[in-house]
Image (cartoon, rainbow, N blue to C red; front, side, top):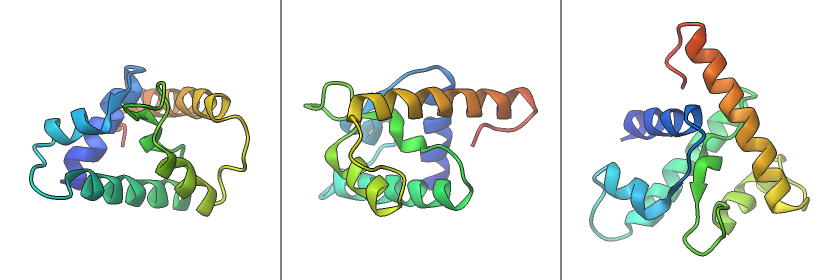
Length: 116
């Protein structure tokens, strides 16, 4: 599942698109109990990888159903835990992080990488 997740996040970022947690779970064919919790854990793992590699957060392309085009609160909690978010305006942070991610992914693709 992680490969499919990272590939889909890269595709969304390259296209400047967002997706809800539920939509992403369905696209990845995740079913059963605790689907969103399992997806969230996988997204948090990508955030840890991104910090370790000094890359923008791929999980920033997620949009909470009730969060007005922003990731769910857990994204901000994890970003804070990882030292990459400090109570700045959430919308400004997300806008900047999404733009940085889109540029990063597009640069990888243009240099022959897979974008992930």
